[in-house]
Length: 460
Ligand SMILES: [Zn+2]
Ligand SMILES: [Zn+2]
Image (cartoon, rainbow, N blue to C red; front, side, top):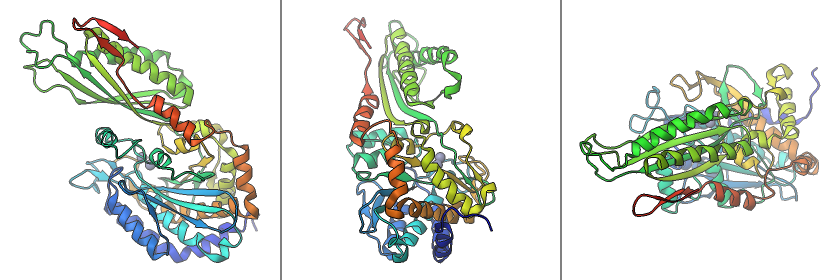
């Protein structure tokens, strides 16, 4: 018989059977009702009702979707959060997309939400809880996908949000206060029991850049006008000129779309809006590259005498900066117990391979986190062929893995969790200090001022 690292995976798998149907039904329901970040009210209501049937009272965020609650052992000890994301992406070409909004769960977050129901249900068992200490915080969190920046910056301006990502917003609301470590599991392509422990999502800064040129200056008589679209063209060239100095190993990317580019050739474009993502796999590099790219955006404005506003809306910190091998090791052991060593990937040489980003990196800036992957999806994430084909692997497996990890962390007086927390060196010593630095970086900047004759007064 294969050596087992822990008794918990077997116990949890057995007990989880009772919740299989509930989880599979939730996966299908949320798949059929996709909504994008901060609009996930259907999933919110559905899950809230399911949790209340299980005897939990979720503490709701209120003016945005999402909630949390604690399963308390009643004994002193570490608090472990288990997180599920609520939001869909937008991909109108996907056959399952909402015909009105284009929303579709082509990133599989519906599986996370379904699995979390099972995690909460199974851990609430007195037989299990009596062997654990501390508490488990169950968190249904909105808005991981960094999309609809216009809508979200409007929500920020209206005072509904302070951050445009769900996990950062939850941190700002104090929902992570008292939490010592956090985990989630994302779904991935494949058709077998499998756990892939591969930390390394890329960091992202999402920004909105607005150029202002002359208002209603005729296209036929443009003399002495300011063309906001030309400012963008110069900036694009300036950014392209920077690309050759990007360090190769840092996975630096910059992609932009034009969301407003003028109204008619009869007038010079007076206002141009760009949404842009800057990516890099290290926090310091990301900050540095972002400043250079902002300088290039400013250069575009300066060249033609346009005004520019650069709104750095949100930063997703790279997971490289919150790499926690000790925590990953717990997931590895649980994965081996459940699926056999041959079905667990834990390759430290592949720490930085993932070009996508996640706000789980932001949680990792202040506490140990893991975000492994299980299989169950066919097709490619974020693509038109993405389907949840095997709920066994996409929903049941992550439920068992996460509940088992929670038990390993919190048994024996929380020994394992305490050691992980003690040895972890977070980028920021506290949530408050992390948020204070984000307030500096994620802010609206007006780098140029002109005098009445369009001469530059200051540039920074
Ligand atoms: Zn995604
Ligand atoms: Zn995702």
